[in-house]
Length: 399
Image 1 (cartoon, helix red, strand yellow):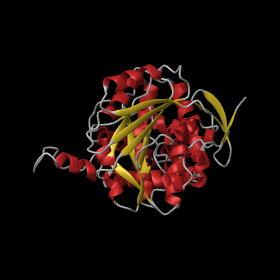
Image 2 (cartoon, helix red, strand yellow):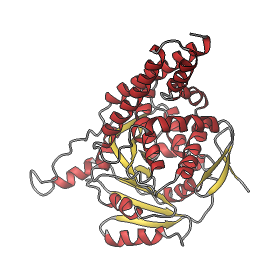
Image 3 (cartoon, one colour):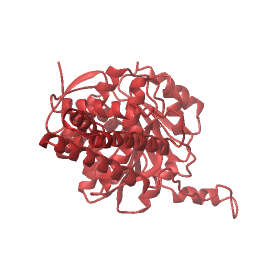
Image 4 (cartoon, one colour):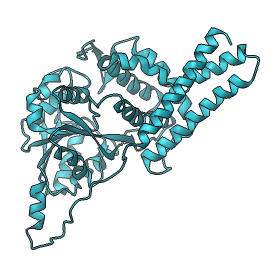
């Protein structure tokens, strides 16, 4: 075995070990576990529901919106359907009054007259990040001590607010966030991305928590205290940054507060995407992570459990005189596919919409190309606009 083959063999076995560690870390997390809420049925007179409501803090939910698709109405309706005993305020923000999503929001508000909900036109452009600009303007209208930020395409179960507020009973917790799954992979390209999200991303986050506490937030749904948000400068402090979720979580963690993960998984419903769309989406994520966490992202290529076994397989077929090395390399690839299938089933809680096994290696090879692309440029396409990403994570609009 020459030096190159030995090196590739070591990298292949390392990537397999990291994949197994990732799988074990995911298995220890209480995924999908729910809190047990007291019964809403009065036990001692009619005041019981009122007392239950008083025990749960009031929440203002901020929903920055831009555009819509066939899934938008149902995703937004899920926020009206919350079985939460505390007060809820929902603020929907749009930058343009002519945005077609406005019609959907108005219909939902009319359909749910018992909810404190409002559509706000946030016409001010306060920085390069349009989403954060909208959040700044919504924050001014917030009534309640807890602030929840969630993306437009996020769909939640009826008990979501009851679960995401539970960790805040610990005063050391400064922010609660949760994992999200791609719920409707309608194309082969989206099913490939589903491997990245529904198998790898959540388990990699849990793997990282084995090394150090979480110091960033996952942006699908984030809950924090309004007082703490004000202490870190509010959303205005990162209006020119791309990774608003990272900035929020990181700044809260820097002040000594813990970032907690809610075991309940939310769903992201996206419009159909082709390979080009997925490539742009993943490349934006990659370049964002590279800027926010350059060293961990650089070394993340070591965990690619298809790239290194495949290169070892090719090298062993060229130079090896035995079948031992090629067989071990093939076993590594098979284990990678089995682990990806298992993680998807655990995350999705069903066999529906699970990507076929062969897409795990395809995703890994695509990720290797994206990893390379992340270091070869600083331009990202976001919300239909090309932006240049600076080293400090801030954005400049491309002309």
